[in-house]
Length: 114
Length: 112
Image (cartoon, rainbow over all chains, first blue to last red; front, side):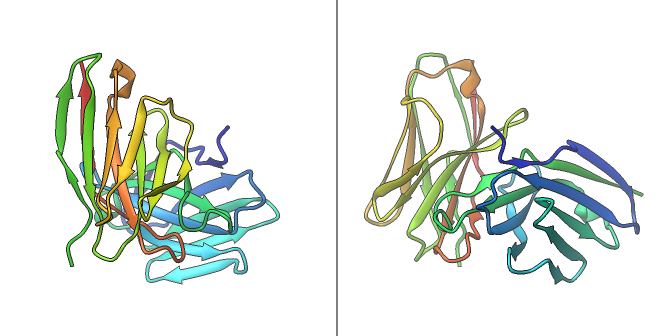
């Protein structure tokens, strides 16, 4: 049972345009959400996070939006750059498992086209 | 400061053998988690250790086990290897607050 779902396995976006990666979750106890970026042959790197008390968090070109009623979050990258081509994982945790168990989605592969 | 170090980077084993993977966390991090990454399943949680104790465990068979030493270094063992165990095994360490992990580069295990 996938508690964190990334329904798009891949996404292609033109360089300079906006990339929008989506994530849905089923567990209403999740209160902290994270995005990780992963290049081939490397471990995932933390990108940005959001607590459930917020609906938006911005860091440079990256913005994460959270819609709690829809149990949906999205990562916006604008403008998209070639170095953004990677696999992006959405992840979530509950208050009880904050420090020890994060649930990941299956990932979305983002291709930035020249 | 040094990142999370996983050894070896690549490993080829035959079915039925056993394997031990190693992870050295960032200095000061006491939590170490292990994940299996496969193309079809994405990142799946194996288990997490904190101060030498397993705090949490995912839905993997008992062939998968681990341990953590007093210096926070962790090892993961898989016995009686199966072809389906071929995957990238990632280790992540954390200070504890906020759930932000630092991952190692992984160990690519191929079972033939």
